[in-house]
Length: 85
Image (tube, rainbow, N blue to C red; front, side, top):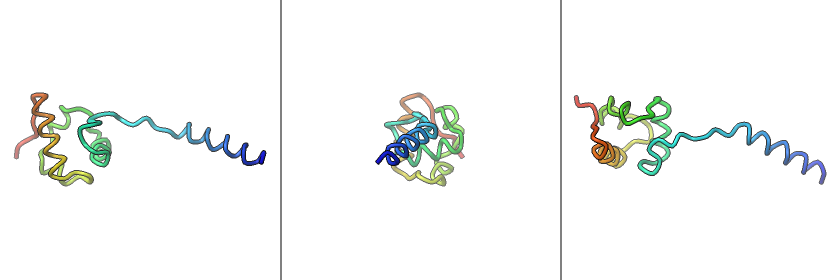
């Protein structure tokens, strides 16, 4: 029993040390897979996002037409748009 308690304490400290605070950019606007794709590309602002075209976003994992439409509306509300080809 004591060994289990010691193991649990060790595991919880490892979990705390490895916990990474997630970027909240576009949280509530688009789903997590799309947000992770943006994070991977180091896109963390609407200004950086406006440097991409809809076609480029659709090629990223986690992006579909619905996600791009949501982003298009959100960017329009913030007076920005995607890059045009």
